[in-house]
Length: 389
Image (cartoon, one colour):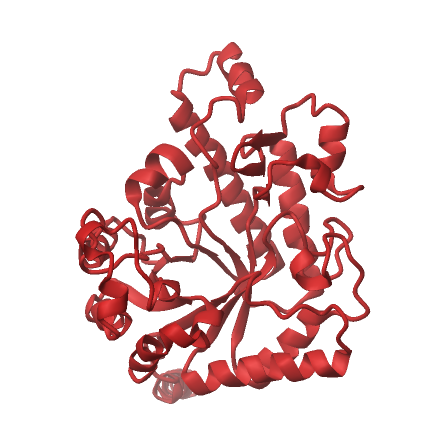
């Protein structure tokens, strides 16, 4: 009996000791201080040696670290292209000088090494449905998926050629499979911290984009109006993308940066941001693009900041704010009476950062984009912003 009592006391003592020795709950995650490195920010690899290119990426990420950033969303697919050697998509013209050009080394691999050396987490950024801004299909590369589909007559309506460009039909499951294969290619090849998509979902409200798929849905008895059905199609894609990322590693992040205007998301883009925010299984981070000044007559920044913060949000989803640094030092022709605000007030972006930090719903921000850290006419606004990082 004494031995049993002793054993019991020993077990209790060990349990108490383990509880006392256990580390305290970690502090809240550090503020996400992100920058977008867009297709326009990439240095072209054309005519450059690997050593010269490494020097460029080292300088870029050293600059970001010194400035105070800790995260980068790096464009890997802007127009159904690739900023790395891909078996599925042509190499980007921004990287190789022409669409489908050749690379003698892997620029993105060098970028990742530079980022890691400077403590910057890199998330691969893709525009899933955008193929080209130019509506001329002849300018696409021979052998790339969209051109092959169009050359075959595109009987399933997978590609939409519109006045504002060429797009994959978001309702076609075959397109989802192609895009997810591209994401898997990235995840299997590179140690990225996550995958990031932005606001390119439906390119317009034109009913011709997905006419075949919607007609088949109605013929099978479907009753949802077109816009609701389109949202459902986009949700199916986003959920599959989330599952693809988590299947590689649950610790990886899926982030989405929708348009800041909620009505555009609801009515034209068919981006169901309310569901993505409130329901697990769609995204880890949501970063609305609040690219508006405080004096914008129809979409003032402070009102949008509060509107997004008020949306129901699951505790697993982090809300960040996309900041429009590209407007610093420029007129905003759509802002009404506030169109010169970004010129008149060099401290505007810094004040926006303060407003984000003062709102408990937000846990960070993203700066669009890297080139604006260097742009001459933005320097006063950038300096005021960086002093607060």
